[in-house]
Amino acid sequence: MKMSFRWYGESDPVSLEYIRQIPNMKSIVSAVYDVKPGEVWPEESLAKMKKQCDDNGLIFDVVESIPVHEDIKLGRGDVDKLIDVYCENIRRCAKYGVKCVTYNFMPVFDWTRTQLDKVAPDGSTSLVMYWEQMKGLDPLKDDIHLPGWDSSYTQDEVRELITAYGEIGSEGLWANLERFLKKVIPVCEECDVRMAIHPDDPPYPIFGLPRIITDEAALDRMLAIVDSPANSLCLCTGSLGCAASNDVVAMVRKYSAMDRIAFMHMRNILIMPDGSFEESGHLSDCGSLDMYEITKALVETGFDGYVRPDHGRMIWGETGKPGYGLYDRALGAAYINGLFEACEKSIRNA
Ligand SMILES: [Mn+2]
Image (cartoon, rainbow, N blue to C red; front, top):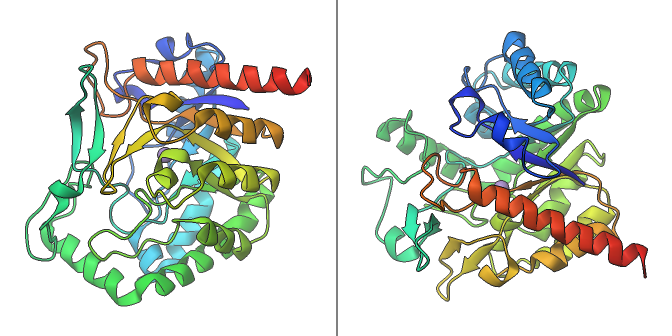
């Protein structure tokens, strides 16, 4: 496996000088943040990102993410032109050494939580989604602003998008994903890039918006659209894992054995009896997922893709981007390193 760390560029309070000190850290996961979805990424921005990583002994070879324009997901407007721009961005990323591009196909909102700084008994804070706090919220009627939602949309724009997605439904969204992949994946094959779709977070419909990348049947269907290693998964344990019906260990084993996991997001979540969830520390004992069994499934199937410690808690008084502090993600990386070393050695010595 190749250990990686997400970095938000120069505005990130966590520096590359610190990231490089995490044992086994090799790759930087980042993106170009100075243009809007649907625009071509300036080569100067990619060149600068590559140089900053090179200067710190790190490799910029994973992009998270090239955002998919809402019109591609809705299949409206100048879709073909927008997909052409997407393909051009993949070519440009490849030119600067990128091997893996993460994206998602979630309508309107990338992820949904009700609070970003829930204080745990030990004083750490983390992101949570409590159904109690979601109850009664209706974005079609009320002005609501959940943390993490794109604040550049006006409430009227959000309503229009929700209505448009309601009209196409999940089958419409699948058709638009198919149209997208059939143009994008051949370009990825040409330039040796693996596309890695991130599952919907959480993996069930919210506010009536269709969500399609949710469970094993959906992942099978998605991978079958273009049967190529370039059309792969970003298997996020914390996203798939917050539906208790998803057997994350079995999914990791299956898709890794098929060589269809390009990127692993490893984090733990604690599911509550009513389906609410909290982002917990990475350790198996802290949440609902068995991180040892997940790692063992990866090692036993010969996984050699990218791994990153996904969201961490805020600990030791650190402030910054919720989920993306240095300290707890570094602890996560150290823990994941330990799991891999133990699993690899026990297999080698068996
Ligand atoms: Mn993730």
